[in-house]
Image (cartoon, rainbow, N blue to C red):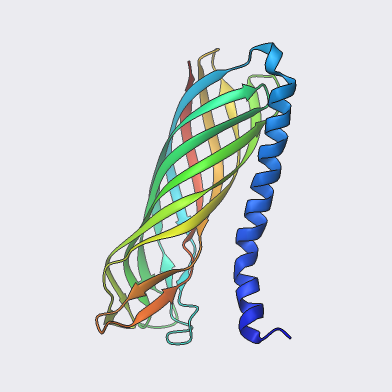
Length: 227
């Protein structure tokens, strides 16, 4: 028989399992498509950069010690840099470095809650599917990787927490479009939902508490140079 803890663990692991399965499926599709097109000589490297705004989701404690403690994340800035390779007219993959940060404030229900600065520096592997051959080309993508989560002057219910320096699994879902200027340059605009799994923080008394995963809605504008 499954205990309540087993069901809770299974529920918490579901996003990780679904993300890995979706990524594996997409990578396999890309691999077979690339083999089918290998004779076409399509091998194009590129560098990309983008910046924009992050709308952070509310932050909360899911554990029983401070369950119900929440905070609202303010709109923050985000940027990314990536190097990738197009190995099929419709598919490409890249490695990406990005960073996003926000100021946390107690929610509107009262003075108690979480406040301070929270940031995530991530290293992601992304795969994309580009659609169409016109100047405007929509695309969708999926990324998985690791995020280094840092905090500054973080407090929960007016209790000082030690600075966070944790590594957590992260994933993102991407949808956007490219405007092709010429064979080298393209402008990009996309939406990205980014999220990490739960991570631990220590308070000033030495107790370890668990914070909900860090999630954000990101609106990015950038450019891509092929070489």
